[in-house]
Image 1 (cartoon, helix red, strand yellow):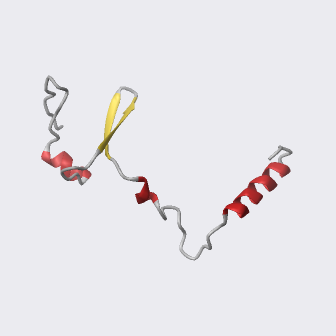
Image 2 (cartoon, one colour):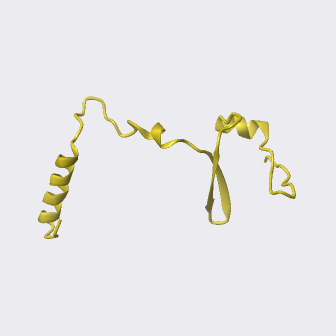
Length: 82
């Protein structure tokens, strides 16, 4: 288990092996996620890193209009107003 001390200003130094495990470099940002009394430390990533995340090779892109039509058709099948 890794530990560090919190200063009077609320600051701490992340241990070297923690920085290495997260791939952190000077200037990188971290994100804190609090769940059930525990804190998880994550390397913050810019939204631009998500580009293409859901892409499937060989699949053709779907237009916004086609998505809206599919949503409306699904809502009509369920008897909902879209």
